[in-house]
Image 1 (cartoon, rainbow, N blue to C red):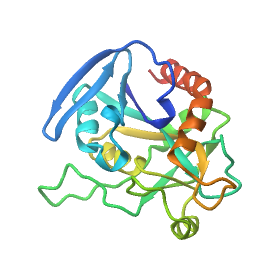
Image 2: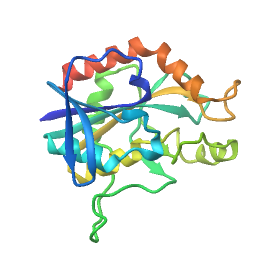
Image 3: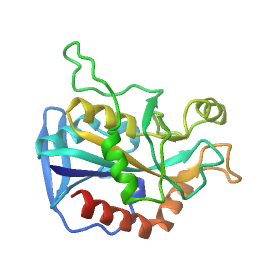
Image 4: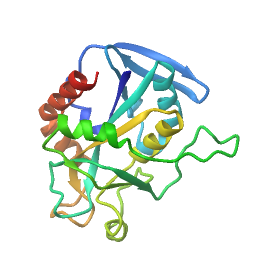
Length: 224
């Protein structure tokens, strides 16, 4: 089995292992992969904001090079005061309030969307400090959610982000196991004491870069 790791904001400031850079051509566009003992994909390549990421090309490229299990690492915001800043969450379900891309847009097809509980459990053993369980909700981006939206989302979900639901759904369509590890880099709008900005999220990611590097190294060692 070949492991794929998808990284985002939380990996922007981390030192990564040396990989061979490859451009993979897919029916949905091109995607750049970093290939070695595992395959890495930086979802914000070319500084793309969440709403412009070509999820179909990214996931298809991973499938084309033989990846069959994926750990998606990304920044998220806490919707609950008890999920504190700097914590890590391994969600076990997800929802979305925006459109989810599909590779089955040319025919009637129903895919059971799910996060791999088997892979998620393995991930929880590798990162024991992570909170296992909870619901991730995806919003479209690029803007941060309003306070009213946060209050509504908090009734149904625990953390919020802009990428995992799309990646998880496409992984299911492509028969790849998928688990997510979400770093909580901010309180959602209205929950924290400071005004939430993208610069604030980046600063938190930068401060946690060494921890993120250690987590990625452990995942590669145990699952790669």
